[in-house]
Image 1 (cartoon, helix red, strand yellow):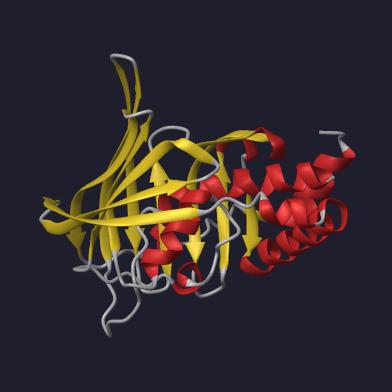
Image 2: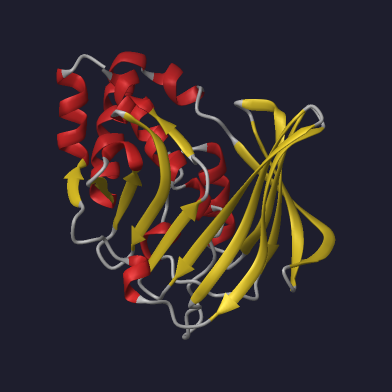
Amino acid sequence: MIMLVKQMIKKLLHASLLLLVLSISVSAQTFFEGRLKIIQTNFSGEKKDNSVIDVFVTPTRIKVESNKRTVNMQMLGTDDVSQVLIRLDLEDLVIHSKDLKNEALKISKADIEAMMNIVKNMAKQFGGEENEKSEPKVTLKVTKETKKIAGYKATKTIVTSTDEPNQELHVWLSTDLNVNLGMLAEDWDFLDTVVSGSNKWLKKGAFPMAVYSYKKGTLVSQVEITEVKKGKVEASKVGVPKNVQLVSFQDMLMKRMMNGN
């Protein structure tokens, strides 16, 4: 049961990872509104697989759209998630999938916190201190290396974690943009290595313009903002279509468990 819940929540969190790559501080008075274009590249030997990601940003909502599959969510009965809507005003995520047709999965901040608290308490009960000792430690090393990305000056920070000793993330951070992240700028230390690292620079008002992932010194993937366009975003771009029914995380979880998956 613990592993099932953990796996399902991790897949949900990976669906919104693309958004968290764009995290910044909320200190300024005027929030950014407009469109960000991102290129995500995965490397396999000499082969490259590119995805184009559009992010529509308003002061209260953020919509992430990919021209390709962004995350495998077979645990939830779908494996083709290409859109994630973060409704900061309602403190939830709406995950769209072609596999779910006229349905979309809604998971709130409260849902995530409640489920993770259950998992953590059960893990403590059955694993005791050993579970706490096994928690990964994330380290951030700020460098003096700088470059311009999409017209914005960025400085490199190297992120490492004890649970992935052969992996490094090179995150290029800028302080020149101001997107309202609402709940996403709060503490999410328990979610994932990248998210845990993100939370540390979020509080310092830094904006990740690019993330390069290295394994044993070899570049395996990169996500980089290639274009920033300021301007009014249509409400329909950051809303739920009228013909789409929202399904709660609890209902989806129950359905999957009843089906024995």
